[in-house]
Length: 376
Image (cartoon, rainbow, N blue to C red; front, side, top):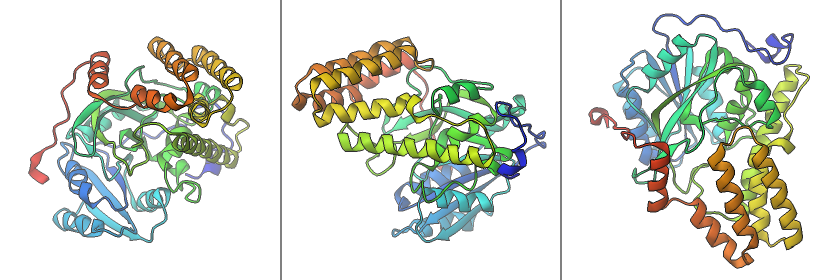
């Protein structure tokens, strides 16, 4: 189905989905670039799934390490694994090639440095079977560091959203309780609308395009179980350690590109509505961090801070704890001398033992994901 195929559909009505067949095929898409050191765990976690009707398509995006060799070794052992290779073009182009080769009724994304819990695919298939009108699914994840040490669960605060949430996503400028690639699954009908991802815009952050577009065209559902390991390290998009003005501005630029890319796709579908980047609180807070660290005059900074506080308090996605913590966190930063703001924000936002303990108390102590050793 192409975007034009639903252009006559009035806005704000969820896409109709065909019934899933018994034991649907699940396609797992993995874009890979110079992540050979993580790929054995990544691919092994798919091979260890309790649900067996899957195909794994790994696209080597012009890696300069031995990524291709690692994938080939697994593909020789299991016919369900397919290696694609191409010149380096970025995450979106790798996702696009992998999707083109896929045949699944359900699509799961998996970053090459992440891994699935053994029951991931079975849980996803079961949830879609119980929610036949939902085309998009997200689930909780376990964060680990580069060495695999447990950090905490995400989401930290707040509950997942479910059902037809397009009005909320439009009102918030694209925000909802989304998850990164490895916590994202969707029906093929959505994939036919979301792909190809605009590869010129998304050398990185391609999943942002998908998880921002899809709740505008389909009902969503979720699983509260932690079904993927999400690895945080210095070379991945989500691996920002600490706070600095440059990375904050880069985060705002990336999310702005996502909103613009989604609006272009909505325009192709002849939608009469679009996302307003000015309503995206995530972008506003990234820019507030940048202004705090760049030394803007105190009066202008205080005005930005008060505007951000009003937006936080009025937001219908943040819960009570977030509405208490965020104004305090940014308020302390605003009154501190400039040279102390970055250390304060680093302590307040980075991972440390005390903070991890507090997060685990707030989110509940859960059994960490254990990967099967048989295929690793």
